[in-house]
Image (tube, rainbow over all chains, first blue to last red; front, side, top):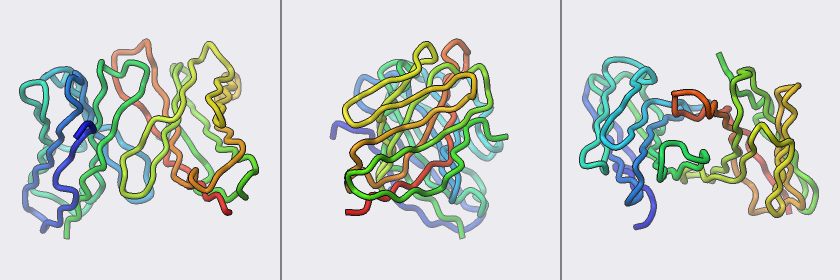
Length: 115
Length: 114
């Protein structure tokens, strides 16, 4: 497809388990972003990539969260030892250049539920 | 500390009337503002933007107004259509800074009634 693709679309896991969320950006987009939206909240910035590099990881909520991007394309967000407060929709976005005119192309999100 | 605030969680208007969605910001370094629209089970999509050097930007039925002194912006949709029913997010950015993130508000759910 031509858009940003995320998988899984839904994930239910038990507290303490690890999860991996995948993002496939639009082909040719050099910048990739992860946001999350918790219930009743706005979009919270987590991390961005320029190519394979993530210069600023300060948005990640804790050291249980990590992200990587390989080949300037697919990115994986990993949450270790999940907690109930990690339940949210995790949104990935990409753009042709880093932020550019601010128009980010979002995927449909991965809904994570931690029981 | 919410730097971008959308104080109305929801708004309901009649088809054909004007919808006005409001957004306030506290960070004076923000100089670029955007509105995104989100339908259920879909990702947000870019709608319209405005730079701080302007006070108005228009695109078809959508107009964004920026009042820098009040740190306030608004999105006007006229005439409103049922297909405009969605959550609208205001976002802001410091284009001169080194952090490449958009700061979003919590969103306003717009319902346009036929």
